[in-house]
Image 1 (spheres, one colour):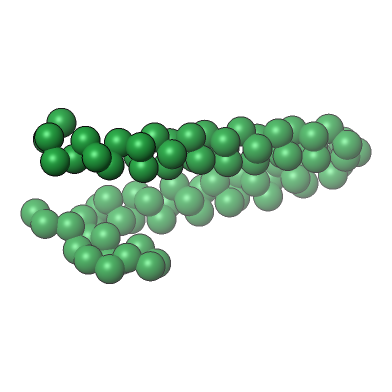
Image 2 (image 1 turned 90 degrees about the vertical axis):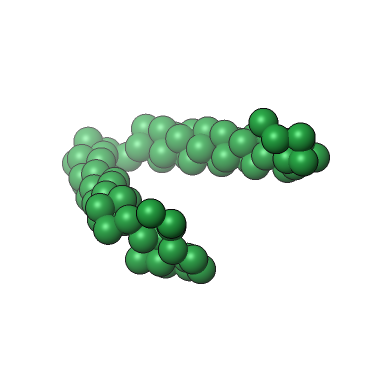
Length: 81
């Protein structure tokens, strides 16, 4: 790690903690929501989440394929090659 980047470590760890907290909260919400549904509704819920996951993976793959960050919504710069 570069010496001048050490001052940013608290910000990095705050971001990591926020990401882990958000992921665990989302997982808990999904678990408890699915547990309270009927069998048919659980299947529909699971199918919908599967489609959303495919959309995320496909969009991430497309960006990795083209090599540009600008193809992602909200991006401001392109990745240097």
